[in-house]
Image 1: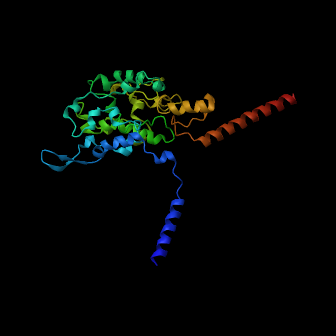
Image 2: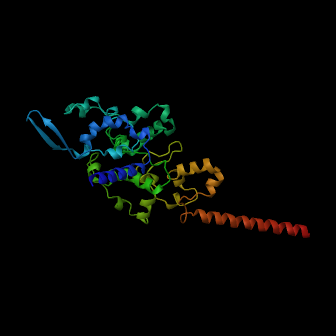
Length: 318
């Protein structure tokens, strides 16, 4: 009885294994940086950490500072997913307990890696850095306001170049702004001023909910630059866009900001004329519908054809 049952189990296990696709060699190999980083994430990926306290002669469990806890799953889908922690942090952090003086070390900035490197030339990091230093974020604060204030190096990923789901891009980018402008703790890291309520400061804006869901903060609060995909020159609030026609017109500023990548992509694939005629960006009136665009063009074509045929017949009759 036991032998028969064992055979059934073995047969079922074999069928189950066959039902899965064979793993490739790449799937079986764990990237080297994941193995190296695991030593850091063992503590910095959890709410608690434990160590042997030699002074007390016992194992101790402590709470991890929540500001130093990083989600490994988020990190491994970020732009820096291929990095080893010690690429940016001192190799002395490999020793535990960490030396307290390590917290005083200067942190790497974006331009330390991205500046002057031809690999990243297409992103124009030099232009972004120049704009940032002219923006209110930099000019009204000291050197402590860096790129990392907005772009967390452990989680940041580029979303502006993916227009397959524009609503996600808008939500993701706006969350970066709201991380300070809707969070009093983060806001007061930079200033003692009272954090203004975003809803109150934008009470002049009609249909707030629709605007916040369909455009990014930077559409109205930055100066566009054709050589930079995402503008970083944050303007003073007095210079923010407040006129409806600046967005809701055929020559909308959204075409040069939110829909910039989309427009350029369509021009490359379909040509300037098709990209201009068949663009479904939000401009004046309601959202354009590609099917209505096609029907309108077909109807327009028939009208032109009818006029042409009518003119030819009249000429022939004369």
